[in-house]
Length: 639
Image 1 (cartoon, rainbow, N blue to C red):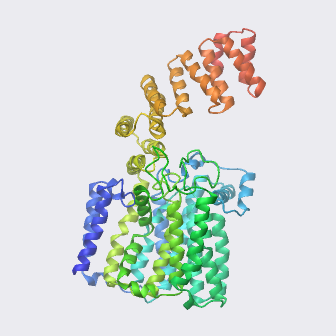
Image 2: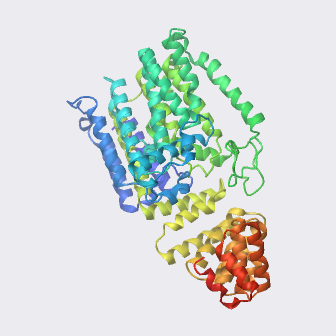
Image 3: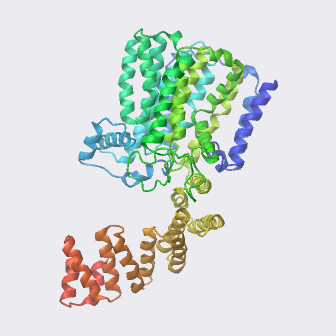
């Protein structure tokens, strides 16, 4: 082995070691740290073999089959992997919103689904509505549950995406020595995880965005108006599915001008594209950022966001504690973005870094490479500014979308510019990075591993992005089957966070205490301990109405109906969880406490406002007539 081979081996080993020993900070590459000692050992041996095996072993012959056969075979393997290793419990992105629909079958199409399907809008939520509408139509047509529809949609999109990406690589790089290393790298991208049973919109979005970019490159390289016309159709579909496709509009326009003879490829230099594509988009983005959305100064709280464009970008300046660790240029955000970007394509970043040696030649390139490069830079810059609504590790599906732009750029660069290093070297690099994809898939498909990963992400999130920490921990511990172990993990998390919390406002810590109290009250029947945690939580957040709900519930289950009634009145005052329900809760507690006059007044108020409950009408009648009020509790059985 020469010096470069040794450097490559050490770099690959160091990459995995960083993920294992620094799992919080290196969340984009930490998956092996959750798999146990044996898989780590096997991976290490595998990487050593890849780098130490003789050159002759890596001198592959071209398979004597048609070019579509290998991508088709890989796509079938991908389908089998998705069916065998789907995400065991999906908490990434907005998937938690759809969990209650997993087993649901529908018998008619809701009007909301019809409206969303046939409306074009660049709103951040419109693409989600479009794809959810499509899944609704599929569920209706097939009779499948929503969960099965999402899985089958993921499988279909993965098969097509792998097939077209693989065929593009083999055709576009036909005869190129780096064709097979690039093919391996593309077929094992970490971003493929979004196709593994992820109940979200990103499988079809990734497919359509990728198809559009590939068509655009083909249209440019062939100077084909027909391919450009097809790419326009896919572009409209891409915008319909996800508004970030608007970032590709300049590339589509420039390609159109080229194929219709309005400009020449030699005119498309870095300088020209920077002046007419990058600068206008930067100026437009700054106007939106500072003057339209005003996100440069923002409180960054997103748990109660209701408007589509609210909290869209990260602020320049951190809001007050506890949200003061995360802003546009904070160290935590830059670290998060580096992790997300590494998941786009590790191979692409290694290859791009190697181009430093031939930077003069790259700088002189014109045509498709500068065009795709400025498209990627604008896309990556936009994603850098986006507020990761659920924290970047949990919103990794959204932040996977730039991967297709990066990979297409990499392929175009390889086509146009000689890459330093031997073919065998790049084969070793691509093979060394394969475990990253399988690590992501394996961890997400295993309940214990995923639980451990989510806890690590929550602990990191508490000191960085902060928002949604309690929810992420709740997801992690929901996957823990052992009750005693679950309680131990809750207590350890609370104890580790407590020294980091001052006596002031800390809603995530309060929420963590509240969720643990709910677990103690409902699952362990430990009412006094649960109430103690709720009281501590209230000192850090006086706005959490769930705290009042669980406190009322604990006193009620202790048969202390008088105390429960005190909290029920507060719930009624705030209308939590909703106004009618809060009245019924207060009514139930009043009857339990023998406060029949108060119960009669509450039931009368309820009837005057809603009069939709036979149960409440019966309570009111019997209280008014003094008809066995001591037996009224039986009317609430099961409610």
